[in-house]
Length: 210
Image (cartoon, rainbow, N blue to C red; front, side, top):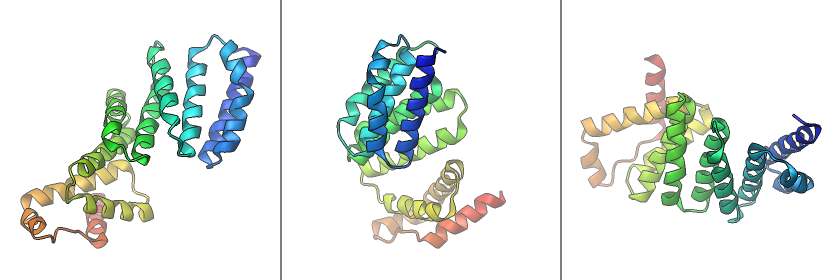
C-alpha cells in the first residue's frame, strides 16, 4: 500500500469514527480533505469506501442525498472481484436503513434482501438474523399487520436487555408459533391481540433455557 493510500485510509477511518459518534459534520470535513486524492488513486475499493462514507454521512444528517451515494457505492462494490463482502453487506444494510428512516420501507426490501443473501452465503449468522428481523418488520408495516404492535413490544424488551438478533428471531418465531397454535387469531379479530412485555420476557427466558 502506498503512503498516499495509507493516509487516505487513516482519514476514512477517522470519518467513520465520527459518524459512529453521531458527528456527521466532522466526518464530512475529514472526507473533503481527501476528495481529490481519491480521484487520483486507481483503487476502486478505496473509491467505493469513500462513496459509502459520504452516503453514511448524509444518512446521519437525514439528508435524502444519501441515496445516490449509497447506490454509487453499491455499484462500485459489486464490480470488484472478488467482492469485498463485509463492505457490500454494510452498504446494502445501511441503504435499507436510510430508506426506512425516510419512511420508504417497501423500497428498503431489495437492499435488505440482497444483504441477507450475502449473510446466508457466507454464514454470517448474526447479520442474517438482524436482516431477517428488519424484513419481518417491513412485511408487518407494509401489510398493516396487527402483529406489528407485538413486534414493537418485543423490541422494547430487547432495548433494555441486549438480546442478540439470533435470540430475538428465535423468540419471534416462538411467538408466531403460539399465534398459529392458539386462539390468538380470534383475539386479534376482537382487538385483544396485544402481548405485554412480561409475555416476551417469559419467552426470552424459555428460549435461554432450551
